[in-house]
Structures are given as structure tokens and as C-alpha cells.
Amino acid sequence: MSVLRRLFLPFDDPIAIVIKQLNDHFWHAETRVICNSLGANPFYHAQTQLPPFFSQVLLQMPIVGEFTNDQARTNFSPPRLTRPVD
Image 1: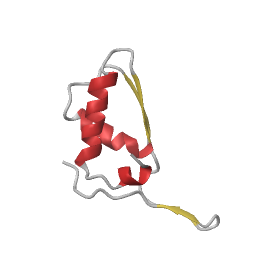
Image 2: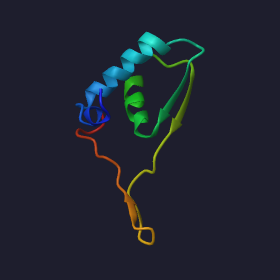
Image 3: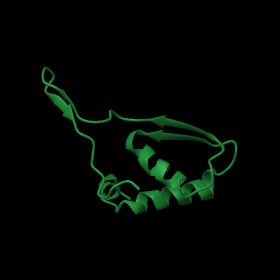
């Protein structure tokens, strides 16, 4: 699946994918999960539908909120969810 296709999945699809991947391949004590940037959000939501994950998780989160640097002429605005968080 291309990166662009993943960006436009309905909100529940990435969560279902994370749940399936965790259950099928990573649900054992030796697992180490790294959630990079916005990938942490589907992991959080998947955890609400699963028993507690008993292994180690590293979350690397992006800047929260909007950031602008006029001198460097750069800015960052995080993507918005298409539906409110429960």
C-alpha cells in the first residue's frame, strides 16, 4: 500500500490494521514497539480496544500544535482528525 493511500484511509482503518498486526505478530513479552510520530495515535486508539499491552513501548511524538519560524521561513501544522476523539 502506498504512503499516499495510507494517508487517506478512513479513521478506523489504521486502528484495525494496528490491532491485527499486534495480535498476529507482536503479542508476546519480548516485543518492543516503537510508535514514530503520528503513528502513535492509531496505537493509542488500538489500545482502547485491546487488553493492556504487557511489553515495552517507545512513543516518539511530533510537535503538538502549530509551529512557525519566520527567520527560517518554515512552519508546521499537524493534520486534523476527521472525527472527534472518543
